[in-house]
Length: 201
Image 1 (cartoon, rainbow, N blue to C red):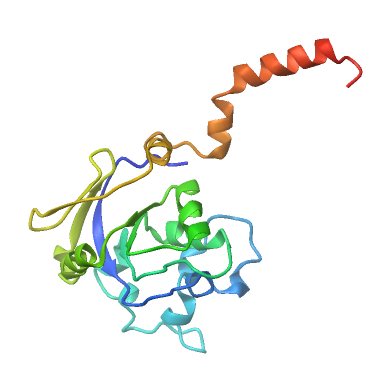
Image 2: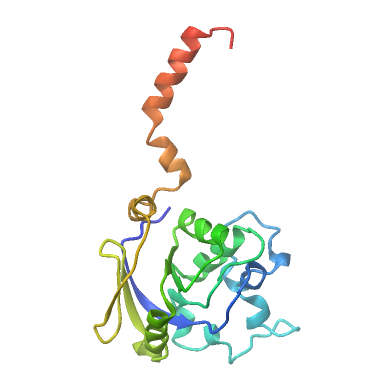
């Protein structure tokens, strides 16, 4: 998993609440188990018409938001089914950080497992970020995970909380497999002892 330390990029606001995982990546795109290639289909029902043509006025088709790395979302983001394709699609598009007043639990956990930092902030702070994200090419923000702060284009700083274990995993790029491999010596010692004490197993 790619490490997350400091992220600087364009922020974009999606002015919707209760965005579910089917809206993030519609069910017809769930046939793949590859984590790449889904970014083109992110928010497909919002981005394309029935003929598959791009809707030019959708924010992710508007410069500079085509290169956005930080998503400012509404409450209850990621609700609905527990499809891991949702964070895959966001990550493949280029998003490494999502800020919202609240997230669905499974989606929130899946973000951390896939290298995306989900940040929960009160609406008053979200409103400041929405204002920053409205500035087009000047909608640049820096998310500093080590310092646990978001720095806006005018120098404003917003602090955020994050679970220490999840913070470490993102900073060091540790997914579940990498966390398990940290215990490789202990696992090997257990297996050796188990084989010796239970040779029939």
